[in-house]
Length: 232
Image 1 (tube, one colour):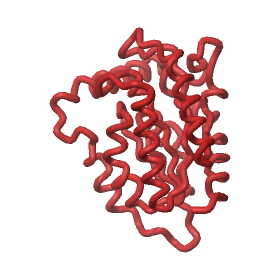
Image 2 (cartoon, rainbow, N blue to C red):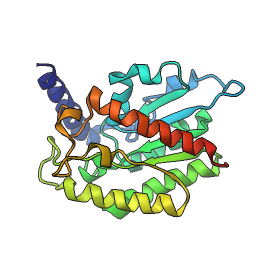
Image 3 (cartoon, rainbow, N blue to C red):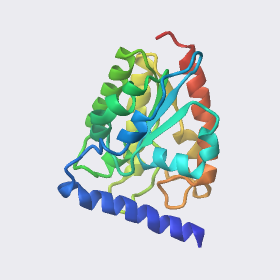
């Protein structure tokens, strides 16, 4: 019953987001975290702050696994349904202005789903590259993550993400390697034989459940550790 409930909620969130785009004046949702950002205190001496930038997968992380964020200087800035151009617009206020030492970027699946219109893999990579460049120009180290596997999108079927996501991930990894950026590889640990998300890690084939986040956490923590060792 819980799985069915979560699946319905996930579908409704993505469907409502897509349908709302034409009538949404705040297209990148700059107001989502405005008050929360204003309440973030200046970094304490020795604090190593990490901001998680992403979509519903990042937003859901805070809800499914709050213990992962508690007691750490981790700040979640995920917004359900978002694509990379929307994240790029809000990157300064939701990442740079919070003065993190590291940003974890997990994005791209909603671009492939066409949430804000058609997007080529090259367009997605361009936006990811721009976020990385903004971060590094401001002395922020980057963990650039693979897109999670998905065999199909329940809210927009037939787009063949099982083929497109591995291709995009190869492009992301090549860019990260070329620019000495830490690459967080969730895909390899979470993909099944169809390049879909393993059933035990998801409630709808796209979004992780608690077990999925448990798999992701040591991967991102290792990425953060490596990023903190890099020079700014």
